[in-house]
Image (cartoon, rainbow, N blue to C red; front, side, top):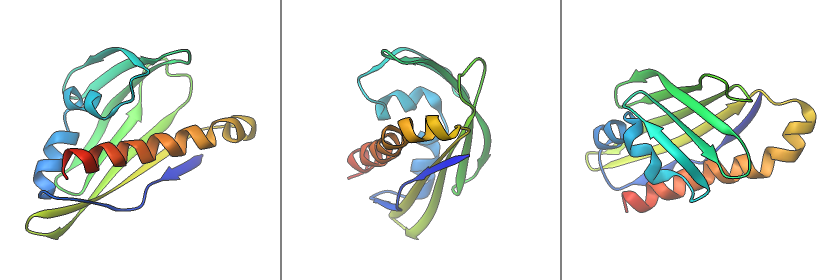
Length: 133
């Protein structure tokens, strides 16, 4: 597994608000880049195409109130992966979030995709930060 993670980012809202937002895939499109097409989602799963790359599907595999949302690849996704949002309370009105993406990549895939996957994790964090600025 190749692991890509963000630092903890500070969000100007409570952990419950962030947890509720991230725990519903219908909100997730707001965090994705413009290259995402064919977006389909319900509360617990989503699928989409990354323009010029691959079709991806994922589902929420576990929700641990106000601490963690665990997401896994689903269906015919070309690479098995896990995506975790880890939340921690800083104070009553501030939450911190770390994003961890683990992908089952062979050494060649890791070499080719590492920068793009780290940028993806960083972009998710940046979009969350913008939303809760």
